[in-house]
Image 1 (cartoon, rainbow, N blue to C red):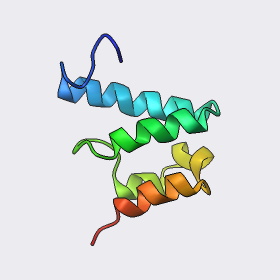
Image 2: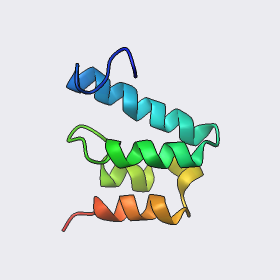
Image 3: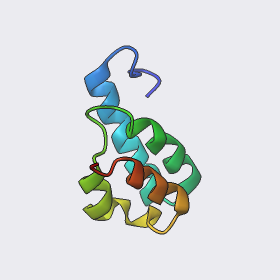
Length: 77
């Protein structure tokens, strides 16, 4: 992430940040994953509502009120 931040490459940097967030969630770094997800959720090519609701990669964060708040913020209006 430091070698290719969003400010230098919006596409690849976004992918790197997304997968870093998934890895954090999978290895139990919930707080770090939630903090990164706040950024990922704001990126147009970042995580979508359906993805966060249905993809099992995000299961470790389900039930966390911070995660549910991020998901709700992406819900279609």
